[in-house]
Image (cartoon, rainbow, N blue to C red; front, side, top):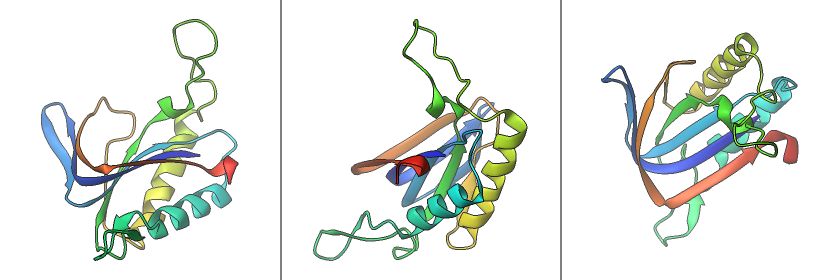
Length: 147
């Protein structure tokens, strides 16, 4: 499982010219599911994301989590995180989970996050336009196979 974590002041998802989800301060997550991901990967990613101390405290140090600041999460599925780019100029996506499995894991991931923080989501498999105001900027790559 790969998750791009962005600390944001705001983020929104638009589908067919309609805003379908929006958050204020919090985390924008781009979530990619691999074919060999398990519940262990989901548990690890959720635990790390909810508790990751990347928001500034009163001293300006990154010492607070999204939970601590009472922020929100916007979760967007993104199979392109598993793009293979070594050969040719057209990325291959054979390292991403097939859609049925990916959707099931993505939805489970979101349910687990929702137990700890308010969450909004994109629409799995849709053509989405994402707007955000990155805060910092702070962008972190979490790969559950590299911990």
